Length: 469
Image (cartoon, rainbow, N blue to C red):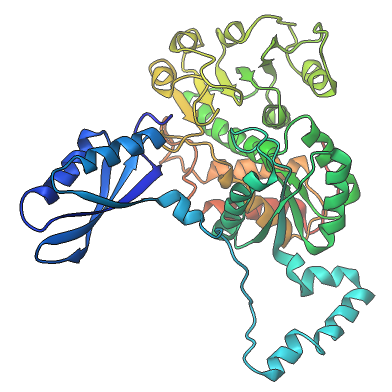
């Protein structure tokens, strides 16, 4: 539950009040007395006896919404007509649409855009399939593919419930990078079926963005698709997160005057995001990392290591530490959490090294209270928008795909991810850099272009395959 009113629970209450008296002035007080925040008050109809008023306000959650409505209804002379949830209204009918880029005003234009003229273009592509990148939407289109198995922090809610999230992702692609993205929600969670389906639809796209597919299946899906396809395949939950974390950590370590190769890092989370973050940190020069999951530190002595955990054990925790997360955090310079809420306390942060860096990225409730962490750590970042230093994947994936599409890349390399992270970090100038500004805003105008340029240069025009750390 949100601790303060949020626009995520924004409502508009349409009501009638007497035209005279104090009812209008009491409306704002009623909302505030219930703990809400009034963001707008509009008179939509006026008469001699009655006024129709729309009161827009922010609440903490659904129960709080009802409490605000009850408080408004208790004002003498007020009649509630309608309560509208503004978030649901925004989603009504979906958030994206298809538009034609060419006019169809007369028979000539129709004959060129469609039959018979389009046949000439189809035959040209049949002779040279590479022309599809030049003459069709493939040049600027991405499929956002999910099976609904790990949607946000909601878990396995299925493909239909995942669709609003995938629509949002598509809208972000368009807003921040001018890319046409299409939600593809698959009614299967079988790896073979997912791979076969994406392979079958791939000719219509210039890239595949895998989204909200649970670990460990997501690793195999991505690996197999990268082997089969000649377009980039990018699992944003893994690599988008990794790019943002590395960029933010690069700047955080500048703030505290430490080097990545020298710091001790404790990580919580060995799933898709945690593994990708680890791989990119190691590729960037990290040397001393301990990763913990729900059973404690990952080490070679554990008897439950699957392929992914074994890789982690082989590349981290050289001392063979076998304790829990709290022990791993003690004396560490950096904590990175991509795991579960409330698993650390302020006292745990106090036990870290001087000038510690804490990235508590579980969302909406972080691994440790940001307020408690800020009492002891020099730099704190979260995944939330109501604290400084928000780690948000929208800082990475639009620019990454813009660069990949522009370069007509066949794949994604580790060097491209590192280049993207370096470019994202560099958007924050030395004059701006500080404990509360280590990563730019998602609305910073330079973010997508900087990341795209770095990826495009790293791709060198054409790239194939994926090089692991």
